[in-house]
Image (cartoon, rainbow, N blue to C red):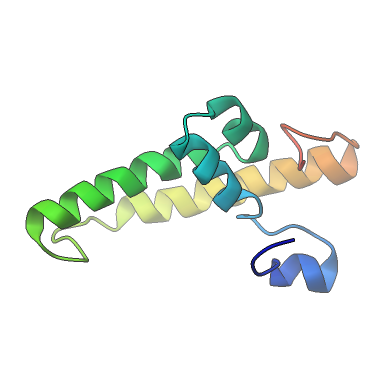
Length: 103
């Protein structure tokens, strides 16, 4: 495996909430939405957010754009945690492989 492995998964064997999110985001940026969603449902959303962030940062000439509200990040964290719990239930509780569980 290239890159750094997930520390939580390496210690416990349980994937973290963002396991496979980087691969899913890359797949979405390449236009492969089906692979992206199979890896992590948030992949296309993160890809769109990265594109929007880049556009805003370039247009404002700031790495961290001004006036970013905090509530979308809080809502996203709660939804990501709920999605992670659902994936754990499907993968380890019901034995599913792939979406909606872990690949």
